[in-house]
Image (cartoon, rainbow, N blue to C red; front, side):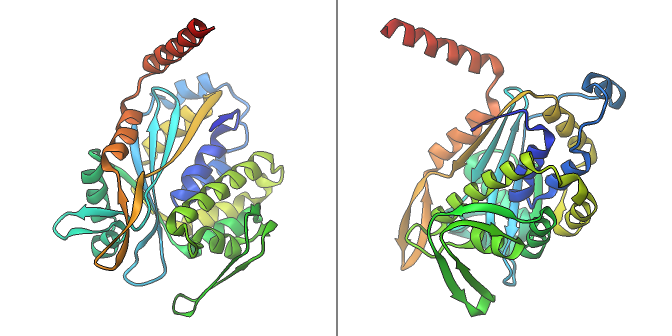
Length: 313
């Protein structure tokens, strides 16, 4: 998915929603244009291009011990000016260090963000230095601070789980979702597609959120509430220096490519328990190919494609 001229607000919303919406509100703090050339700002602030990295985004559920209800691996590749959103189904069957094979979200309940990071690092053959965590209440506050989001709901979504205090009843069609109903929309997974269907809805919601912020002229008036909501909504180990580099890197780009991928695999049952059996070889290829890609590789690939197309004519 290619996005042109959206500025740092888009980057922060992407990280913000699936990273606990943490960067969205930093972006709203800085998201209006500063009347200085970015070349000057970079010189004054000592800008250097950020290193490629991965950031683990976790949305917590409301059951104790907390499990990772949403897991997204965000990849940053400043060499090719791209961002990868790699969605990991919560029922993915992975090897949890010290505990054997289990659902990936159980690793979070058993050992917190540290064990979840170790599990994904082992499965994907990468290092994940940064993380962001957000809970349901924080998500609702952030969406309400934005004034809600309009989205086309593909079918009626109905589900009741009294144990989780979860009551979902969203009609089909174009709907305006406040924080509470937006959370219901991105949590719904009670159909034949299960967690995979929910991931698709989360991606749809993200696109609607991007469109809203890109066109919302009233966003600046909500800055105080957005900033306060961000402070209360998340926990992260991202450093101020790295955030500064990311801000200036993304603001300086005219074209960005934001890719959304879901961990490939298939549903399966083992001893009566449902899992998402991931294709780890294909998953490693996706994330590692993205991480190590260089601009010259992309340009050479495009030239080869053009050459092949010309030879066919």
